[in-house]
Length: 112
View 1 (cartoon, rainbow, N blue to C red):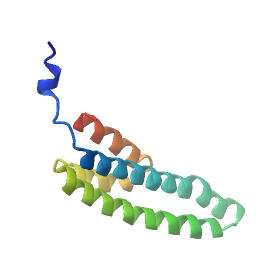
View 2: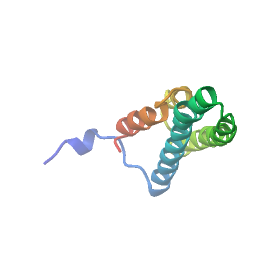
View 3: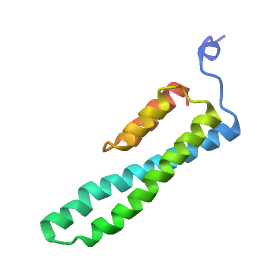
């Protein structure tokens, strides 16, 4: 007999799992676009004089950032995330690798 199931967080419904998967996907896309902007587009602009990459990657990152914030708020209401999750997700989106760390911590806390 295992007592781990009695202390674990309640299981998420299918709709909640789908919302969490959408948040994970958007976080990965937003985080990847931010890293591309910082590690590829910015060096191309300032080292090789190619500002076009910043325009395109920056625009894509801006769209993905707004979509990530919208999905974060939608997921927070759908799953009823803890109070710390929304500010942590927003702050994480401003940091390199932040969305990846936020996703890991959130899933660990939710028991996923």
